Amino acid sequence: MPIRRTLAAVIATAALAGLGLTGAATAATAQGAPSYVTPSQCREGGGEPRIDLPGNPCVGGTYDGQAVD
Picture 1 (cartoon, one colour):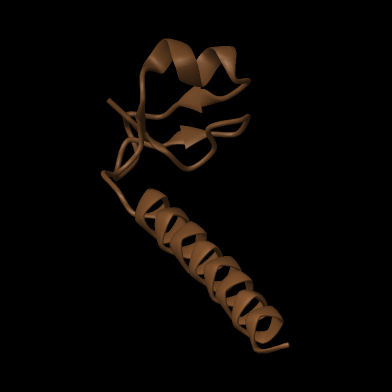
Picture 2 (cartoon, helix red, strand yellow):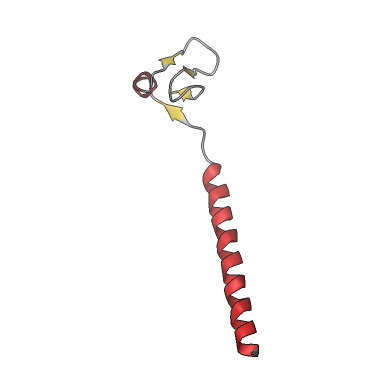
């Protein structure tokens, strides 16, 4: 009986540790360098590169709001 309890505790701890590692990896991936797109990527995504506006945004389409580099 004590072996079963120990085994259950080990499995539960491993499962929780795995969830913690997954959350940390997701958080690390979410942060990063600012996203830039090329003018051609902006157009292919259905947007319009507006380098005349502050921040040079891609307006509309898939890359809406991302800076054009």
